Amino acid sequence: MNGTRDTIIETAFLLFLKKGFKAVTLTDLEKAVGMTKGTFYYHFLNKEEVLKEGVTRYYRMLNNRRAEEMSRVHSLREFVDLTIHNLESIGHYGAKRLDSDIPEILCLSLMVEVISLYPEFKQMVSDTKISWMSKLEGVILEAKREKEIRDDVDTSILAKNLLNISIGLINYIVMHQDISYALSSVRYQYEQLYSLVKAR
Image 1 (cartoon, rainbow, N blue to C red):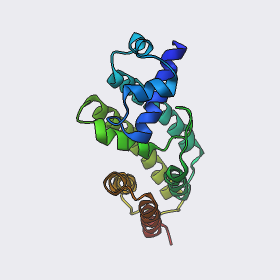
Image 2 (image 1 turned 90 degrees about the horizontal axis):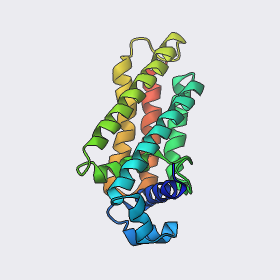
Image 3 (image 1 turned 60 degrees about the horizontal axis):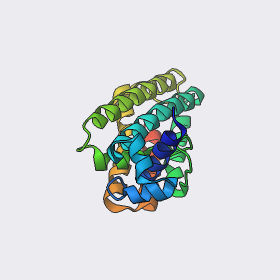
């Protein structure tokens, strides 16, 4: 793929994450990439096209990263610790490249902003959530086999509850912009839920 096109996609997507899609202007992109309007329009019809390509690449990388992370998770405790660590990374986020460790919550916040404009993103987010649910249910089943958690816990409901804690965090941050309180709350919720299902 063309190097300039890749640079525009990467730079634009990182700006969208940082400032929001609507707030980023073509002038912002020109300055960030060091290009002219003519160069931009040679490669893209508009910034919406750049957003679509950036999101598609991000989700592809996210799913690859999740698969790699989950291959290293062998207990529900490890999953909880990894999830808390990943959520806390938003507090010191400073990605310079699209393939860096971008907190998923930032992308989901961007999706909240643009999902009504681009309904196809809803399917992308839904597909990703289904994939994540399946992997998480596998972790829970393994935790039951290893007697880490009680075997009477409903696997699907526990997986949904764990994911919904993260979704609640996203909604809170989008509405209130109070990251430190949200992270403290989500850490407490994960720990409480884990203690409820842990085998005695």
